[in-house]
Image (cartoon, rainbow, N blue to C red; front, side):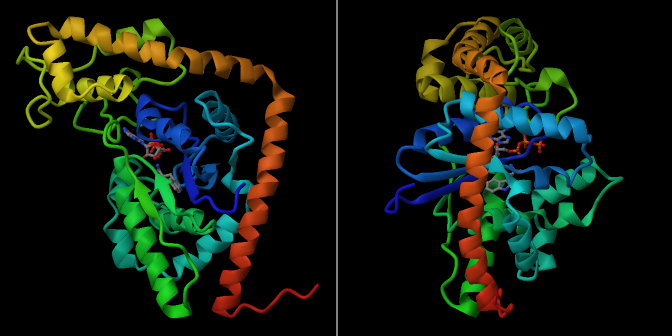
Length: 335
Ligand code: ATP
Ligand code: LTN
């Protein structure tokens, strides 16, 4: 890790296989930032248990997510890739920041409102204070930039407010992080209900494209994607959310603008367009899937990455945590 580079932190929950939304909204951008920044990419398993998880599946999902990070192009010798639950600084700073986060602020979080509706039988305190732990994740490393999808913007704004509040009381402690939200792909929608975001934990399997989906599954899901009766390939989120979503997926993958795509497919049918989009996605995912299958076979290599990166993350986290504890007035550790 180089001294003069700025720091990036981001994370995903190991709540299932990565979707095309996670990839285009976050992971793809991460791979382009790894040369320019010191990057930490976390598997936020502590956040994942705010919704009830099956232990064996959680463990498997966490390891698979780590492998997907690498398969998608993150170099584990250049980026610190690790599990949140193995760096105790997250929990420790999380508690402290809980005491600097107001209930009024948490009440406004749309992710909390959405997840409470979805899991009405388990609206636990962790789900409510989730954003304080996320603030801790980010502030624990003096992060400059946080590459995320559009849905995380509100959490990022709260993180900045918490950091500024702490700095005002105790003097300059935390770096104030900026969000990095891509222009295209930051909000990929559900293929069956295109007014909702595509989500890993969606129940309808036709609604999401997974990074691990086989080519024929991808084609089938795109063919079934909900569109409209306008018979016009036009980016118009209000009136044609389904087709607009397919345009934004195609744009994020090919780097073509919406105008270019509209021109290219002028007069063509939705059926043809869906096949084109599916082909582009299949081609993009092919090398990632190959790498993923290879890495799955190399247990020792993955274990070693986990071991080395966890040590690095812990070392960095402890330095900032001690500084915060001292500012607050916690007694020094006597050795
Ligand atoms: P869950 O369904 O369990 O809530 P999720 O699919 O929303 O999971 P997260 O782990 O919460 O995924 O998010 C990982 C990253 O992917 C975040 O940066 C988030 O902003 C981004 N992301 C999630 N969904 C989308 C989407 N539909 N479009 C673009 N980016 C997304
Ligand atoms: N809240 C995020 C996941 C997350 C995260 C983070 C993202 C937890 N901690 C820190 C960026 C930085 C989500 O639900 N997608």
